[in-house]
Length: 244
Image (cartoon, rainbow, N blue to C red; front, top):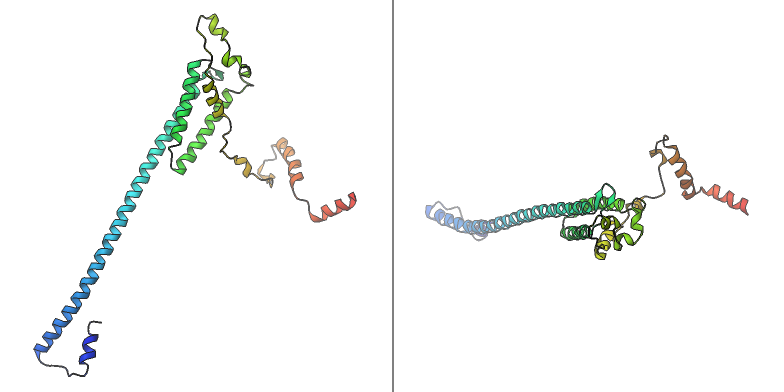
């Protein structure tokens, strides 16, 4: 490309033996090539700057993401610690409920704090792990407050009546604050936004996955499976004709 204009103009001229002519030709090549090289060098410089800027941006994004995940893990850990403390506040011994106004208030506040912390979690993976752990705590709350285990909670007097045991012991008794009752009981129940993973289990069960040692379970499930399985066309037709 550099020599092409020279050849177009001087292609009929004989090759010169004069050093001065060759000097002029060298100056021509140097001037043209330096221009192209400078242009290519400038383009290369711009490309290098762009690539470095992209690399720095990617590095900063990775740093921000790593910080976000660390923050999310802190939020998740603190939220679960609040739920553990909330459960302990209203647990007297094992499955016995503590009937104490202050304990229920503190438990409800800790549940709400855990909810606020969980709402700050941005990482999908961290929040998925937190949701699984939260389900375990809801199950533990549900077991503690199960009316079959603690049938005294079936009566409103447990929450708003007189604690005769405390009264006979000379202690002041107070009713349990209604908002704390609402927060705790609404937490342990199934959340409205939560989907049930069992809905993904269809009725095309593979009974071979259940050992024949578990005979009772198999005998219970097999009739259900047969009722929901589609009938072969021949069988369905013969039954329809016999019914007719």
